Image (tube, rainbow, N blue to C red):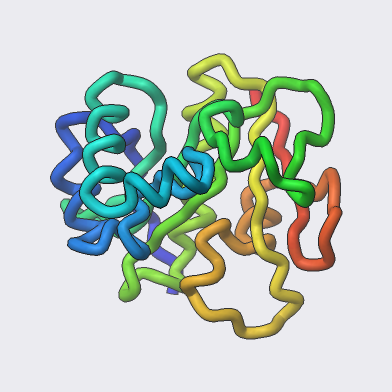
Length: 189
């Protein structure tokens, strides 16, 4: 059953909501949404409390970090959202290397509370991301979802999002260097 969550940017005032959503493990193995932001060695050194402190500092700085989805007063979903250059791990990826020289904002990471999965939270986050990024001056929004081709995939492996959710939010595949990993874009105004 689809829900209509309220979507808000992560700000210092919403840090406790983000912290509650991510839980004591930082969503996945101490990541705190920094696996995609840092080269491997830097992430390994920061994992856990270090990554959490880095995310808190980033949020406190006012730099774009992402969006939270709320059901009532509880945060139930997260989407990382910022200019692609902020996600340094993408620099070294052969599969997700830039399609062209156009400046894009990226949506490389999602986390939805277990009891809210399968309810359209990711699609709602994607649609809200287009509005939010446009307000910040972005013209293109890009994501790197997993294309499961109807196969069941463990939730832990689809933190990139699912291609079906991207399609529902108006994204189109613009490159595919891997059978299961399209690069999807949406033009925004």
